[in-house]
Image 1 (cartoon, chains in turn blue, purple):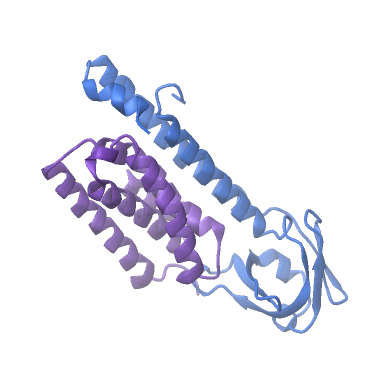
Image 2 (cartoon, rainbow over the protein chains, first blue to last red; image 1 turned 90 degrees about the vertical axis):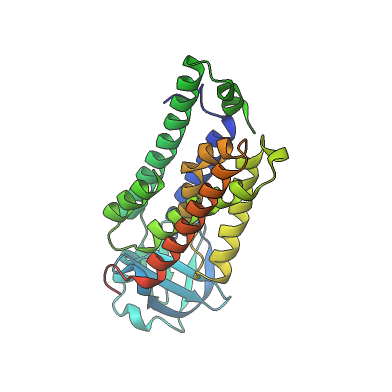
Length: 148
Length: 124
């Protein structure tokens, strides 16, 4: 990747976007999240098909979670009213007297790879544009590489 | 490039039609913002645009596209990342290129909203 030629604000923006996406996708697994609350409902995430569900908690949080988590419960559509507990970083969710193992899903890795590719493409193209402009002696080139 | 990236995202995630829409919307908003930004700020146009989009994507995710999902906001920002360099160069332009870019930016935002609300890809 041509990091040298790319404007550094773009590199920072791409890194921040990548970090947000990775952190957000990790939250689907519930691993980074602490929960000690009553479940209000577990429902489908209407627009996104099979891979995610929404966990509504009594404290007002609506967590988008991997479907794989709820599939481990016997009757996931009727978890409302039960207490859910887990500490941040823990790989097990307890709801009532049932337990579900937590792991990063395939969707997490797909998001990470896609975001990595998008950021790398943007930086590579910006670096190339600056290099090309420098090679042709355009006065805009220096500005483009140092802007921001 | 943003349209190509949105198509690629749709191919990778065929059950998430909202993510290509977020990406196109972010790209369009970045271009639109850069076209409207005063030329005096040209050195900071792209950076200011990106920071504004961080706030905007966060706010819209909380207020409009809930439940809040950080990945949705990240796809909006990915659109801004893809158009960062173009926004940077646009900040130095005046006149017609800005008008053309503004039209493209507005078209991308409208297209993203149409795709977000006008289609339903994948099971619901």
